[in-house]
Image 1 (cartoon, one colour):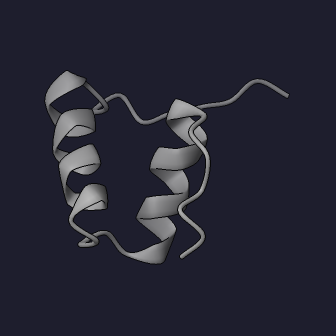
Image 2 (cartoon, rainbow, N blue to C red):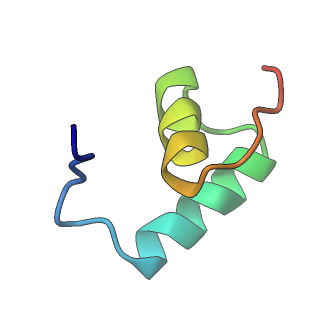
Length: 45
């Protein structure tokens, strides 16, 4: 199955999400989304 992402995902949105993730400010669901989107290892939170 092909992954589908919202059209509003752009560089600015991704960079803000990464900063918020690093600061621990993302909800669990958004944290999992950004990890999946960028294929990065989980922080274990």
